[in-house]
Amino acid sequence: MIPANMSIATLRAAYANATTTPRAMIEALLTTIAICPDQAIWITLAPADTLLVRADTLAGDPTALARLPLFGIPFAVKDNIDVAGLPTTAACPDFAYIPTQNATCVQRLLDAGAILIGKTNMDQFATGLVGTRSPYGAPSCVFDASRVSGGSSSGSAVAVARGQVCFALGTDTAGSGRVPAAFNSIVGLKPTRGIISAAGVVPACQTLDCVSIFANSATDAQNVLAILATVDAADPLSRADTPRALPARPRIGVLAAADRAFGDSAYAKAYANTIAQTRAAGYAVSDIPYAAFAETAALLYAGPYLAERFAAIGKFIEQNPTAIDASVRQIIMSGRDIPAHSLFSATIRLATLRQHINAAIADIDVLLLPTAPYLPTKAAIAADPIGANARLGAWTNFVNLADLAAIAVPASFTPSGLPFGVTLLAPAFTDSALADLGGTLQHLYGAGVGITRAPPVSPHPGPPPGPPGPHMTIVVAGAHLTGMPLNPQLLALGAILKTATTTAPNYCLYALAGTVPAKPGLVRVAPGRGAAIAVEIWEMSPQAFAQFVAAIPAPLGIGKVDLADGAHLPGFICEPIALAGATDITQFGGWRAYINSQT
Image (tube, rainbow, N blue to C red; front, side, top):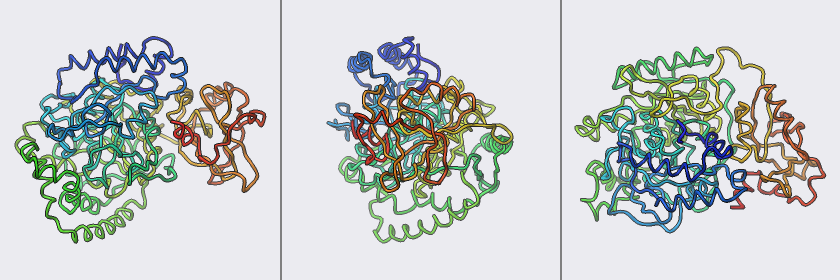
């Protein structure tokens, strides 16, 4: 009933083929959760009758599957993210409150047709990388119950790895969306700061916090990100920019031997093997100087940024000291008396360190780092709760301070059966291109996903050892965009997202009348009359391209589309006859922005 390593595409196909229904899926998942040997994954489950009503409502709408990109897809959220009617605890019962509205990120997923199963366990107040700092119990690594799950987004990662949901939201300030992914052999996408709204999220370090995504494949994480990414007036730190591309075969930077301070020799060997695999696949790999990264990482917990954690929750801790985990209390309260001038000094030092980081990566496109130096036992964390936890952030703490995008992917298993993962990092707003590379490398490494270690269900093949084979490109602007209803048609043909960009500023976009699912028409106009329209460029084999084009219905067709960089690529165009009754939506700058405005 429940497919191994659930994927969005697999579940949508099962619903379309009537091999299962949203109700049957929810019933099966609730049974799986009830009998799971790890009962520390969840803090609050949504009531079963509410879930079944949601499932039946979706199934009862004959247009919903075509219209909603996440139709019937089960997901979870970390319990520092608001869900209307369910308590938000941040893993502290005395802090709990019941919000009256959903966090922006939750609402967008529900609007896309997803089904929220419940709220997951976490390190209290998102302070920790271990997953043991919770009064609701400590979730375990799915491969070894004696070892930690990773945190602070512990329950979200384990729920995905155990097949209890298709994807889950966490948060990531210092690695909380990446370390648990590595410890459970799943994907953890930490987006560019601010591109997913944090409105309705209990802050840890508000200027650094990110909502993160756990999934079985980089493809699913990428598709969820496409739905969540939005500028939100309710989040003062929300932001957007033009998505940035990466080269087809990016130059990859890795740790030099002197900087590989692992706590596990098997992990050290696994990283060396991963580098060798990457180089053998045809990527240019070179060492990077790590000193500036390490100093940046130290600023997070050995500098004035601790004051921001106190600003977020310190007053509550002062009033309720016995309600707080001892390690969490010690860390957060150490920020209480930090003088303001030290923050300004650190800000200037961080700006200098960013310059050093930019210089260190000037000759590469992507960093490939170990996600964590070792996978500790619960006993080791209990013996040294702060020191052991701190060591886990060796290669994660700097990322948000340096304003980088990141995606953690499974890489291999040690001889003793422990998962080893790596993280890809690139400049801000490369999220889509980085996820695409993550999917390719996830297949190349072949570690398998979650507790089943089955291959991920996604369209990314491993890269060939030589130059890429022949391919065709196509520019899409509407229902075939990532996460949109017709995107599965591209995925089914093995298409790969190359980049997100915009057209040249001489196009108008129209919402066509009477199309199901809703579709736009892209029309070239005279210079000065149009605008730049958001589009995506996909690559596929010539055979797949021919099959795809042959299936395009009138009044749409394929012609040459002018892009912002001067390229002229095949893409969707619209016959003028279709504009009768159409609505000019050019002012939105793209189909996704228009669709979001309608919800």
